Length: 87
Picture 1 (cartoon, rainbow, N blue to C red):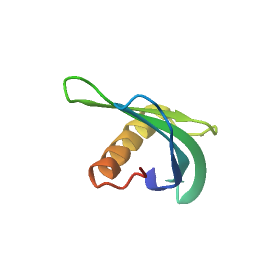
Picture 2: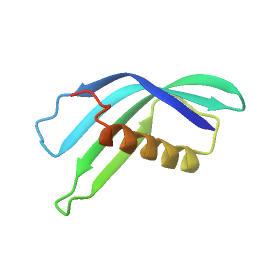
Picture 3: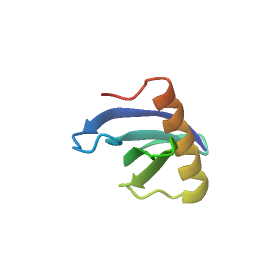
Picture 4: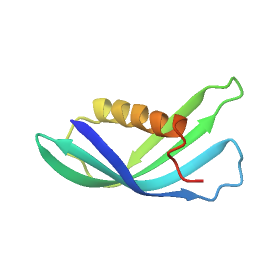
């Protein structure tokens, strides 16, 4: 399993300044086959300074969700650190 990219990302308007909501399409490779899967994810900043990333898969995925969710969270964290998410 490999996450290629997240495309068509759109930031949803949320009145809470410490929470960012996004929607997009994750391009994921399973067994040398790529597929597009719609996702919603949020990044919430806690008072302690920690980030909490939550992911919801809209499309059904035929792959174990625990390792996929972990990998997606790491990918989103790297995107956010590199200012790769839309404002």
